[in-house]
Length: 306
Image 1 (cartoon, helix red, strand yellow):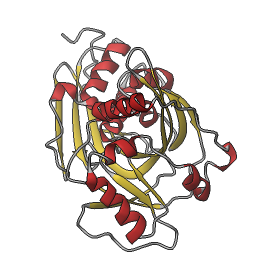
Image 2: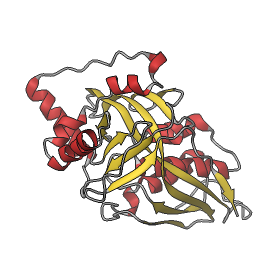
Image 3: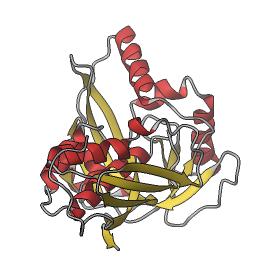
Image 4: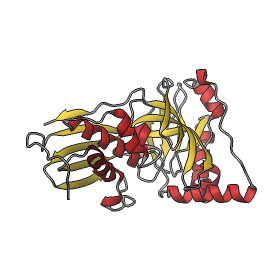
């Protein structure tokens, strides 16, 4: 059942296209685990030029999702659990709109690598549907919808290329992005389950009795690469790399072989990224698989299409 207000025939078939940008976390602290099971985070989100291509159309009632691309799709999962699909359904429910949707995704962001590909797709779908609506919800409601879908979704739905975020990712402070830099991403041939990574971290902290305090950051220097290098940390990296030695090798490749100073696990993994200095460096080759992209300085706009 679609329910809600009917889609005007003039709206059905109209579409929007957007580049769903990947992200990295330059800081990722897991501060606390709530009684509900959710984790409180502190993170610095930064968008990348690397993106999926998203096309969304409104329909009179049918709902469809088509995913293709040049990355391994074996970790994609079923349609109903796809974040883009869930975002579209959540939008229609929140807005009270009837009808359906057609979503096409051209995947370029590796799946299960911690680069926010699924979340970026969800954020792009929310933005596209709102542009197509007769009565748009606006940014604040979109962020609330995104927060229910995952900690990365609000940032990747928002209007900032760079932000400091807290809580479940819904509390954000927009920042001026650091100067654009080349990013090398090593993508091991496996995915890391995010829920499992949280479980490993909880287990490690429970056995040691660790407590975690928020970082003390100089807000005036968060656009300075040299400062970011000094504060960069990912709480997932020790527990994930202990289980996947390929991650240690990827870190060593970027840090020791190429001399990159800021090298981190991306999100909960499995990808590892390194920020290339302005003087540049050579390619790491094809083993392990490597992507070359750049940090973003803006959020790509949603464009209406016929």
